[in-house]
Structure formats: C-alpha cells, structure tokens
Amino acid sequence: MTQGQIDREFAAAALDHLDALYGYATALTRDRMAAEDLVQETYLRAVRAFGRLLPDSNLKGWLFAIMRNVWLNQQRHDRTGPAFIELDAEDDDRWRFLESGGASPLAELEQSETRVRVRAAIESLPPAFREIVILRDIEGFSYQQIATIIGCPAGTVMSRLGRARDRLRLLLVDRRQGVAT
Amino acid sequence: MNGCGDIRDQLAFYLDDELSDLDRVRFEEHVRSCHSCSDAITGERSFLELLRSDGRGDSVPRSVRSRVEGVLQTATEAERAPADLRRRVEHLVGVPRSVPAWRRFAVASMAVSLALLALAFAWRTSAPEAVGPSEFAVMSVATHQRHQRGSLPLEIETGSPEAVKNWFGDKVPFLLELPTYQEVSGQDRLYGIGGARLVAYRGDYAAFVAYEMSARPISLIVTSTTLAPPSGGQIVVARGLTFHFDVVDGLRVITWSHRGLTYALVSDLEERGEDSCKVCHAGAPEQDFLVELRVDRITGFSGLQEP
Ligand SMILES: [Zn+2]
Image 1 (tube, rainbow over the protein chains, first blue to last red):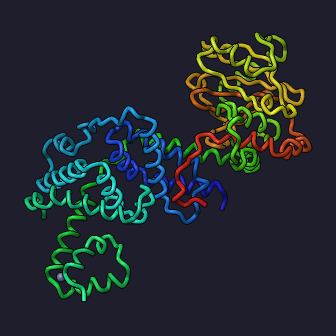
Image 2 (cartoon, rainbow over the protein chains, first blue to last red):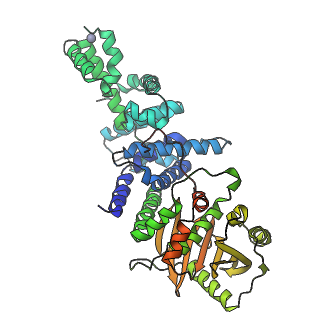
Image 3 (cartoon, chains in turn orange, purple):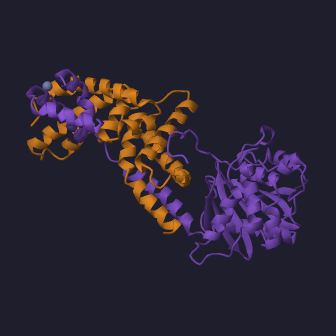
C-alpha cells in the first residue's frame, strides 16, 4: 500500500465525520459562522497532523479532540469573549415544515415537534453539559474517549453526564408523554 | 445479592455499556426477576434513544462541505509529488528540536530558509502529471530573467537583510521578514543578499530581493496572497506550508503562501550530488536552521495517540 492510498483513505474516512464535527462545533461555538470556520480549521489541522495519527487510532475521537483543542486556543486568544448569535431561523425545523406547505402528515408534525423540543432542551444546557451530551448521547463516545477529548478524568465525565441527563429528563420526559408513541 | 438501589446506581453505566462483564451479568440477573428495575431500564432507554434520534443538529452546509473537501483534496494532491522529492523535503524540515530563544526569527523567514535549501538540493525534474505554474510563478521567473539581463537594476544594494526590510517598510503594505540566521550565527555563508527593488504585479507592487547562493543568482518575490494565490506544479506539504514546485524556461521556481503573503523563489541552481551532501550533513547548526520551521505546530494532544 502506497502513501497516496493511505491518504485518500484518510480523506474519505475523515469526511465521514463532517456532520458530526459540525454538530460539535455548533455546540461549542453556538455561532454558525464560527462553527463553519472551526470545522474547516479542524480539517486543516488534521491534515497537517495526519502523520502523527497511529494506524489503529480512533479517527473520529482524534478529530473531535483536535476540534476542541482548536476551539480552546481560539477562546484563549480571543478574550473579547465568544459571540452568542443565534442560529438562523431557517435552520429550524419548524420553518422547514411551514415551507413544505402544510403537506406533512400529522406524524411528521409530531416528529418535527419532538425534534425541536429535544434540540431546544440540549441547547438550553450550560456549555459543559451540552458538550457531554453531544459526545455521549449523540455521538456515542465511551466515557474514556470523552475524557481524552475534553481532557478530564473519566469520573468527571460520568458525574457531568448524570447531571446533564437529569436536567434533560426534567425538560423532556413529562412533557413528552403527550406526543410519544 | 444486588439490591434495587445498587441496580439503579448502575443503570446509566449499563445502558452506556460501561459495566464490566461480571457486573453486567449480575445486573441482568437482577433485572430478569425485578419488574420495577426492568421498567426503569425501559424508561431510561427510551429517553436516551429520544436524545439520540432527535438531538442531532443539522447537516453541515454544502458550502462548508466544499471547503473541507478542498482542504482534503489539496492534501491528497500533495501526494502527487514524486516520493523522492517529498522524502527530501521531509528530511530537510526534520524532527523539531529545541532552539535557543535568541535564535528565533519570524516564521516567514524560516520558510524562505527552507525554500532556499530546498532549491539547492531537493529538486527533481518535473513529474508528467504536474499541473502548470501559476501566473505569479511565471511573473517571478520573468523578473529573475530581466534582472539578470540588467533591465531591472536594484534600487537598494546591500548585504543586510535588515536594511532590505527597512527599505521596503514604507513601500509595500506588508512587513517583509528575511532570514538572518547566518548573520546571527556567524557561520559560513550558504547564501548572501545582494539588494532589492520594487516590481509591478497586477496593478500593485511586489517586493523583489536578489540573493546569490554558491555564486548563482536566486530571486525572492513577495506579494499579497490575494493578488497571487499559489497553485500548480508539484506540491509538497511540509510543516504546515504547501510548496508548489515548477520549472519555467529552464528555471526553478517554488511558490508558497504564509500569513497572507505569497512567496516565490527562482533559481537556476543545478543539483550537484556532492554539494548536496555537504550542505545536508554540514552539522548541528544547519539542523537548527531547519528546525525553526515549526509553522503553526499543533500542541496539546499529549493524551491522544501520540507516539
Ligand atoms: Zn430491582
């Protein structure tokens, strides 16, 4: 196997995680433009650091760790503080549904409403809780992988995850009974 | 053996697949005979599935996907450069070592140093699949030729990089950092500066600096990346910089971009095996010269898959 093949494989594999990284970037920055730039910068860094990735490494975890590191460095350098511009309304599922001219069946409306509510609940979490829910419950990283990505003990991951889920349960579980299947 | 309280404490670990085999067996044993705990698991599992299925954000915008594909494409294209050329450049930039603080210079000047040395002994004939040179590379070669013919005389003649930098100070809208390693270290000169002048490029000025290396002329041309995005040629990525190697009119030109500026180095240097080895193995000072090329090095991944 030549170096070129390895690199094309790396490019294809790295691209598979693009949506996941964008989701994480959005959770970290809460700003659409910043998230887009963070995604691009993460891939730039990954390409440059590719040689340091061992063959049996977890590529997804490595990319997430790079993203978090880039973001942390940006926070340190940008002491004016992060911008908290809301995501564009057109990205919201409610608007997507309205644009479809009301043709969606009731099930789709319920599905859409659930989605909006779940995402709003996650959005409402404090940053550290939001991050841990994205990494564990959306992206499926193990406690140890999360500990590596965010640079804290696994015990901290567990307790933080527990508290984040407690909050989400309060926000979602009772209200959900109306629309749940 | 296990009470319901223990089971509830382990619930999240069980659903997150974080229990040891033994604990999981005990957990499942209890749950098989306990409806209350079984119901708790069902409820928590559907809650986590709700998060998983409906908590995911939007897909990445198409424009961002294109940008990322561009990043990966460039990195893949870098592999088109002949393996031999790539190996030599990688050898040149070497493994970073610590360097005394007094020897630190501007990053841009390091890149110039790298390219000068790369010109001297990292060159190979153009690969058949290489794309043609950029407009800036062609202009840089023309500038080099016109200067050699005497139609572009220097506007300042000096052997001092500092003097050249100051001369450009009020003439171009950027700060031109030039390598000063030899002046600082006092070692034998690998190359020397002759002087500089302004040249026109796309309705603006570019900086032209004349060097000589082993009594052969080398031209450095610098302008803004907005005016002259580097492209084409054989691509080698080293230390975070993307170098484009071309041959134009029998002259060698390397272009690269760093921090908003695009650089071109033009030379007719032949590769001479013996000299290359001499330069390459000159010893520790030469290595120090090269290890300063740590452009934008990534740090802070010590906990992660580092060899
Ligand atoms: Zn029980």
